[in-house]
Structures are given as C-alpha cells and as structure tokens.
Image (cartoon, rainbow, N blue to C red; front, side, top):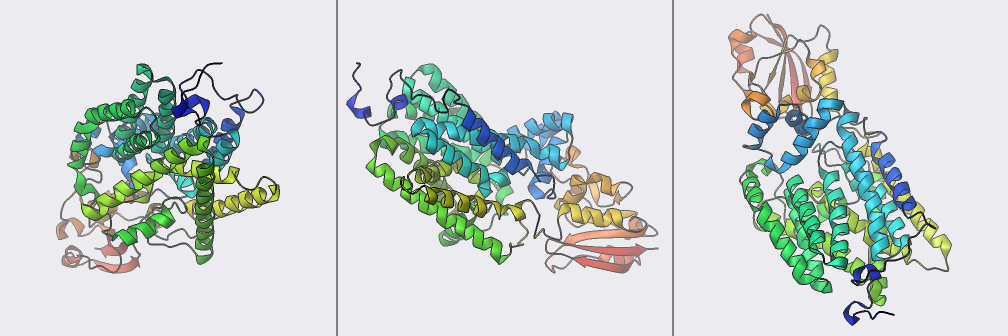
Length: 508
C-alpha cells in the first residue's frame, strides 16, 4: 500500500497528490445530484424572470449590446470597460434572440444553474456528497443568486467563474501539472475580464493555499502570472472610476450593515429606495440568522475533523478576502462596495452553510428536515419582491414607458432633462414609436455613450407641437421649464415619482 505524505494525511485523497479519488456518490450516477440541483436553480431563477421591469443597469446592457462591434469598442474606450466581455457576449446573444426580458435574462439563469451544479461537485470533492448536495440546495435558493439569475448583468457569470476556478484549483493542487495550472490561469483571466473585482477571488485562493500549505509556491506563481496578464486591463478600467461615483459614501459600520442584509439574504439591488414590507424583512432576518448559525456550526465541526479543514479554509477565505478587500477600498479610497459586485462569493458561502447542515445531530433527523424547510421558506419569501410579485416600485422603466404609450392621442414629442433619463425609451422603444426625442443631439451608438448626448431645447422647437412630455429629476428636485414657458406651453398634468418627475405640456 503506497505511503501517504504526512503533511496531507488528513486531507481528502483528491488533495493528497495521489491518483486515488473518492468513490462517486449516487450509486454510479455521480452527476445525478449536480443535475437535479442545477435544474432546481434554473427554475428558481428563470421562472418569473420576465415579470420585473428592466432597470438601470440592465438598460445599460441593452444600450451596449444593441450596437455594432465597432460602436461597442468606441463605448468601452470611455466607459464600462469593466463590463466589456459581457457586453460582447450579449451583443451576439441578442442578435439571435432579441431584447425581451426573457431573452436578456436567460443566459444569467443558465449561468446560475451551472454554478449551483458545480458547487455540488466542489462540496463532494472537499467533503462529502451530503455537503455538496446541501450546499447546492442552499445556493439554488439563496436570494443573492436568484437575483443574479434574474437580471441581464454579469453577476451570475462571475459566480460560475468562481465555481470553475475552484474546481480547477482543486485539480491543480492534486496533480501539480503545468497544464492544470495553465487552465487555472486562463479561467482566472477570463473571470477578471468578465468583472475586474473577480481578482479578489484569485487573491482568496492564494491566501487559502498559504494557510493550508497546499502547493503555495505554485498557487502564488499562477496568481502572479494572472496578475501580470490582467494588469493592463485593470489599469485601464481603473481609469474609468468616475462611472462608480454614484455609489453612496458610507462609513465602515454602514457598509457592514448593508453587507449583513444584502450580500446574501436579500438580493434586490434596484436603486428605488422602495423597501420591502416588514414581514418580508422578517424572513430576511430569519434567513440570515439561520445561515450564519449553520456556518458557525460547520466551522466548529471542521475544527474537530481535520479532513474538513480544506473546505472550511477555502470557503472562509473565498468569502472573507473579497469582502474585506472591497470594504477596505470603500473606506480608505473610493466607495466601491455594492452587494452584487461580490456575487462570486455566494458559492463559497453556500458551501459553509452546507457544511453546517451536514453536521446537524445525526440522531435527530427531524432537526435537519425542520432546518432545511425553514431555509427554503425564508429563501423563497424575499423572492416575491425580487420577481416583482409584490411591492413593485411605481416608477419602473416599463411603467413609465406604458404611461407614454397609453396616453390618449400619444404625445408628439418628449424632452429628457438628462441623458440617463432616456433609459425607459432604450428599454421599451416600441412604446415610443412616433414620439420625437427633441432633446437628443446624438444617439448612444454614434456618441460612444450609454444614453446619448443631449442638446438644449428651444421655444421655437416646442411651439405648435401639441402634447409634449417632459422627464426630469424626481424627489421634488427643481426642473427647468423655461423653454416651455417661452413657447407658451400650458402644463396639463404632473406625475411626480421618487426617481423621476414627468410633466405633460400642451404646446400650441
């Protein structure tokens, strides 16, 4: 019987550098559990994904994906280079499948399904089939992941890259072959090109390798090589940091409070200030308490079982290092912490929760059933707001576009105070057929911007047009109606909302 190196004696065999592997679970059907969890995750994300209106960031995807490759490259030279790979992916996707809510969000739901299936495999490799199954189940219903699978942004893809990168890391730790480290490096580079903060996932792997003493030199070398390859991209993207000036400047305590609620347990990131009902927040708190308690319980079990140490350390590092990094930058340099930016930490968090579930008292099976049922219920209730079944804001892009489309006699023209307020027309252009945009100087594609360039509207342009709609700032902010006054236009209706104010004028 071959000797096993003492430094690796407590690790699962696939991390020991031997050729042996754990026997597959599922009685010869090792892919049964990943497939089942993947289907569950797909259904959780996809069903009802066509219900919510497009929101600001998704409209940015529509604006970018709907232009030619040349125009897209021009856009990335000035803004959103950090999203470039995703925009190109969606450009080719939408050229075939179009721009409906269902079509735009389907790739994210697929990415979530694959990420959850892969998480089952990670749990099995680092622990046991039960840990993998529990972790996949938790991730499939986690509000953060469901939100990622229900929006046309790259958050779901970063989670998928995190899962793939972890699987490749385990493979490279086992074999230490150059080819496996090259695969790891390629995956890491693609993940960072998908979203720059994914670099923190690579850093977390390096930290775990050092702590565990698992191929530390090879892991650091691979991480350094990845850093060298992506450095030009990171520097270029950092040059566009003005695009995140909208992120609220919070104290460390405020950021920690936001992270405690929104990072995993409540996924809705729409900037509407439309808080969910108190009873929904109650389930969010319940979910947080349950899952954090299970993480603590699982880590306690890992301290007593050295074979679980790699799972515990890798999972903890993959959550803590990215979160600490982003929070540190937010406090010390520039506000950058947004919960969805760290979606790629969700699989690691689910693995820690799954570790806790699998180590609930073996003699009390009913405890596991109660805990799993409570987790499922507490995870599903917040999705009523994620899918806009309840508590939908009154000023979504779709609702505002419907106001214009349903207006008697449809307006002859519309004026946007700021270019970004044009998002409703970019998201739902069919509702604005025949409505002239008086404020548009240059289209988004031609101007190399997301929302287009505006021009001042004159009284001469307004005179005699008939019904003209004005879209300005919300929250009671002052708006400039001087051109309408000079043209003798009469205000017939005002529609004040949180995000915008819409005013209807009759210009004769």
